[in-house]
Length: 153
Image (cartoon, rainbow, N blue to C red; front, side):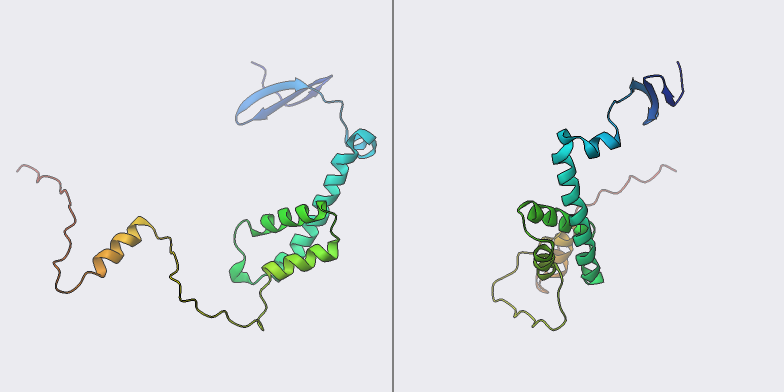
């Protein structure tokens, strides 16, 4: 088996996931994608994505550090892209996303609602909560446990 990487004539040899592959060399070039009218839509969407990434970067930097979670930047970028495709201006999109994601310190605190909050908890948390909230008069719940048999002596 031939184990090379690179291009020879019109064949491209490459390694991916530990396997070696060969394919035909593409006739598509970066210059053609940027200049050919057939790729005008591709370049238009690339422009939207570039603007969306810049907007998302600016908005994400203003988000409080404790609210910056994995995937938030990508979420903001996607929303910015969607709004830009709807022909909204960069300033409008930035304003909308800042209003949605950036919490100001001067904002009044929301009042506690009287409605119970549905809290998602893990199975372990549910078991521990049930064990530790048992009433004093009730017997402690028994948790079945299988111990290994003693070793013969």
